[in-house]
Image 1 (cartoon, rainbow, N blue to C red):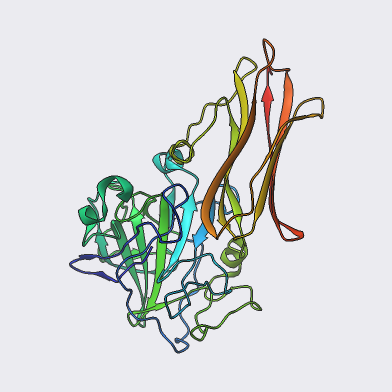
Image 2 (cartoon, rainbow, N blue to C red; image 1 turned 60 degrees about the vertical axis):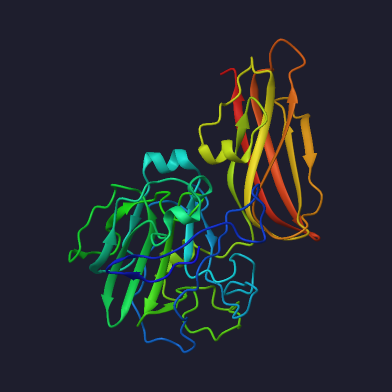
Length: 353
């Protein structure tokens, strides 16, 4: 998402499908230009804590970073592809709409005063409403916290009716501000966080990085406190969702959450994965092994034609008897990038116990 500065009269921001993803794999976005990014190292700002009540690698992932490419291309602070053209913040994505409905808090990243906020924008995907429906309210429900000395943080796409603070209120680092929603110009539940200094956007992972440069040596600690920096250690791909189902799955079904788990009586046994931030050329493999240690089903994908913001794959088999044998079924998902394993995940389901 691109997100313009939140003004007293409203919150401006945007999220809509990026040009490099189709409707099947799009999660990235483009919109109106952001305020200028500072080309000089800003003054020392607040030390930031992790701003969402989730665990990276378990209940959420970092989907997008700030775009550091000054032209029409896109690259994150590591010169990787975990961003898109003009993206002006950090996107922390939760698994699905079921998690969103359960409630995941967005937290103040540093102490400060609530300067501006907006509530009342419906939690509906922009794929349903169209971008025109949220024109002028692209950030959706949002909050700006003033940290003093020209520093502020902005939090977008919050759930309608979930704001827990008021303008002028002093907040502590880690204090809940609201819950993650689907408001504004976005297609998936996440929190977009923008850091600004004197109205210029600052990348909290690399605040002093020169335009078009890369930072591969500091680990992206930037303005983050050590615990937050460790939690958000840079990944070149990740598994967002993985599980078993009793029938083939779709991207929409994974996004909705609540997929029906298989039983011994299911007509099919299916393992599925949705991965994010894959690279062009990546090769994916997914295998199910039964309780006896023998393969049940194996599938692979041809090399990806380009970087993918998200990609779903599944493999399965129809039942050949009256019931699936009882016991543990394990699935292993692997992404091979050249001669190396870039991403891997093993997960399991137990039937009949």
